[in-house]
Image (cartoon, rainbow, N blue to C red; front, side, top):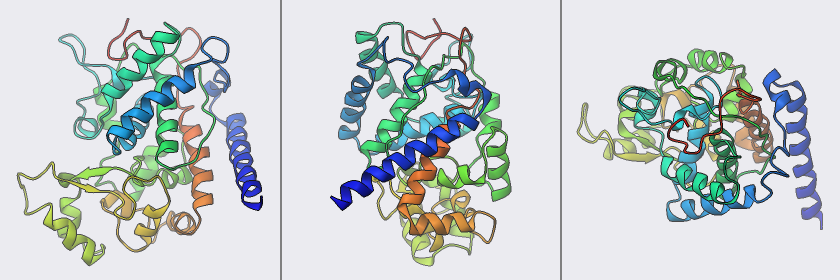
Length: 329
């Protein structure tokens, strides 16, 4: 009974924290709501959850990819689904921007979710909102916290490869660059640390050898054993093995938890940008807190991802509701 009471109290605390941030978030968030589709599509959430769950059951790492899609979308002109648009002979999207081309995946799963939702609620749900729901469901399926998702976004009719290259910091970023990137979209250092560095889900997922080769070979501020282990799968300089993968969190690579912060305290961050969060700077205290307290991490992650979901959302008559997430209507 005590365990149930504690769980209920924590759930209420998370919900309360998220609602507080709703009240003080960006002005666009005033037009988003938790019950936006309650009447128009009451089967929305179970439909999305079933499709996402099946995709992650087939490939556990897909949950990290789907969460990353939401981050990379929101950091480029807001949470508008622009990352989903395909290139055409007359249109250049964001998928082939340098931070995205070898990093973001899961577009086929988004297609499957969109198809399933269109089958029960045609022409109602935006692709931008689907990304937000998919991100939440992915976290929950991987063992992370649940949170209420604010909805009511509309889809962009345009995209910007240049903005993607400019807005999304690379894995070589120092802490100053990371903080600046977050501030540019109205987020703070707590949001940065809660997103586990480089605003990717680095508590889960994999990274390519090309992203961490320089870090494990040339830096001294890294755990020696981790560096030696990662060199085995990432040999040499300018190797043909650029696409070899390694887990971002070697302790629990397919579970959404707080262990990546423990790794940082032990100098075991796989990416330079990750370890920057624990490097004698202003983020150290938060990394230490999250390394000790999964409750604190879950709570702050929920608040921060809710705030991020408010970034420059298209609402009202702006944008459109795409019938196909890969192209404008």
